[in-house]
Amino acid sequence: MKLRRDIASIPRRSAKETWDTIVNLVTGAGSVDASTLREAASVMQSLITDEHPAKVPIVVKGSGNRLVIYLSYGEDAMDADLSVDPLTWNPTAGDWSMTAPSDATDVEWMNGTLKTRAPRIRVHDVAAPAGGDDEDSATKSADLTFNWGALK
Image (cartoon, rainbow, N blue to C red; front, side):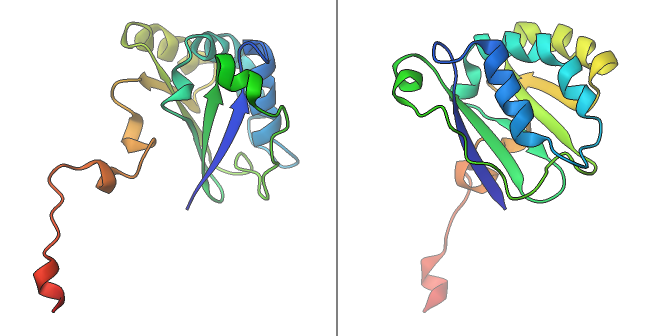
């Protein structure tokens, strides 16, 4: 199951405050490698500034549901509430991973940096979301055909 959280970002929160909010959302007692999230801060703040998580989410997969995090910017952020509904589970309590969107030109250096600092986090080209995390792949497929006559 997929669960969504929306977080107000720039200008309501700085990139650092936005990342801190995400880290606080996804960690708790029992988090594994929480330091990974702190080590990824500079890379994650950079991609937050690029505003791609408004259209393609940051995705956390681990224990429990798949969490998709969208960020709002500009007027949308100004109109948004600063509170974020807490999760009923800790997605970083077991084996977890995170993916985030970035410009194609930044993917290589970001992943190179994350490989040594935060190996549980990967960046992907915003134009090619990792595993169709922004929507279920089936809903995006142009080749999907229903034979409604078979239901008679």
